[in-house]
Image (cartoon, rainbow, N blue to C red):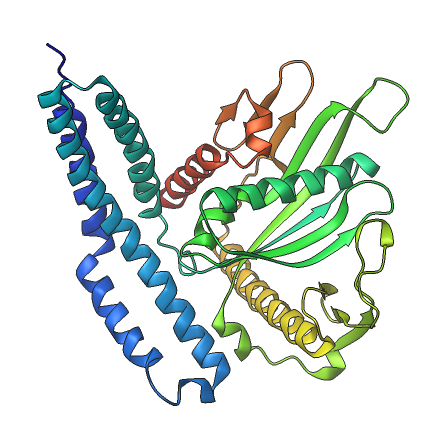
Length: 369
């Protein structure tokens, strides 16, 4: 007699899921959705476009969060029914389907469990990610483009909306830098553990000699914050340059000077935007990112001052937080958490969940110490 008993597995999943829903507070989430829905339905909502955007975005995020919870609840109920029917009919195919569903539910509930650790002030917000090539010449700019594809593929796997806001192509291979927005609940809290210096070691495809080349790229992650509009930036503190948007190799993709580069003179922070069609739209987008970075800089300075006054000295692991080895051993290893993968190809194809989950847990332990 063919029979599949998964009662212990499902009970464990339900127990973990119950802990998650207690932390998320589904009742409070429903109340928040009702409040935002009422605001979104106001006839004068779009009289203030910025407020309207905040309300509709917040509503979309809350609805997506609730849907993840309700979908898991439904799938747990459905898989129990599937197992019962499969056992009654002694259907081997249905039993295999149930096994796959349980494995996928373990992954999904694991992701939700990690999300409950994201309780930082800005963790639930969308994220703006900037990748910049570092030392290493063509290998570094090529590496930066590999990282860009990696994160875009990760977002695609999770069905997170992504908007590439700016790309600066290198004269040779790859990109000098790129900035993109991930518009999803908890995108900042999730991706913030990816911030830092990434190192690539491989046999260079750009050199004539078969020598190992080490190159670097930096990843910056900031939250999308409405509070950024509170930052006052005098016109005398910025320099605005306009230029034509360009594609790979400097190829022009725009016949007008619509791209905008804003330099904040007191700090040296530079923000470029070329995704929008008009110069006005690109300037507005660049100013929003600049305001966010200045607000974060101000907060970081305040925290650093507090630590200085308290006499706290924090040791660091050094500049690099993750290494990618594409020769010999074929390995990707996070130097903070110790998490590693022996399949760099899948990592560069967006398989980052293990690294991200390990990073979130590592940060939580570090913050609790």
